[in-house]
Amino acid sequence: MLKNINNQLVSENKRKLQVLWYDTTTAYFESFSRIGIRVPGFSKDGKFKEDQVVIGLITDENGIPLHYKLFPGNTTDSKTFIHFMLEMKRVYEIEKVVIVCDKGMSTNANIRFLEAHGIDYIISYRMKAGSKKVKEYVLKQDDYVNYGGDFKYKEQTYFSTWQNGRKNDKVRRRIISYSSSRASKDRKDRENLVNNWTNIFFNLTKW
Image (cartoon, rainbow, N blue to C red; front, top):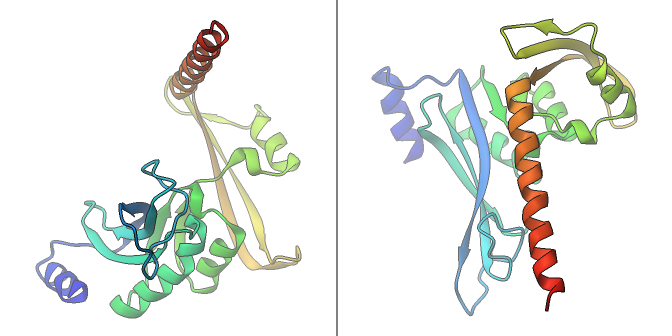
């Protein structure tokens, strides 16, 4: 059914599949019986004691869903990625596409999979999970390019590697950006979080 809907949208020039966005969410069930893939896991609804399923979903540039796939409720985000992409390529016979997703999918295994299948990608990167060398490069200030009042960026190209560190024939591009207005917002959010927990702790100690 989803394939037929997609074919109709493409034929009417109402959908382009050059760029697709992938993400996951969870759906929980208030039930006394555990059936199939409904098992407890990390709940994005905060329902950690309830059974749930993980839903992988990919959309087009207009946010219209193209395909979805259900996974057991204890599946981590990154472990859904390869299974989902293989099924999507098989069902829709998509050859040339750019996949966009957040840092939850940013594992070397997932990126190597995309490279091996000739799929272009844009994936967020966890800086705190980066190596010392990566962090030093990010903090180095003299090669940033200023763009506008509060935004700057720089690019780095490097070889893709296998799990044992051997280089393969793929080259990756890393784009680092910095926004002073975003940094200010993040700082205020952290301060509010610290203040809230400080107040909670202070009130608890009064009992």
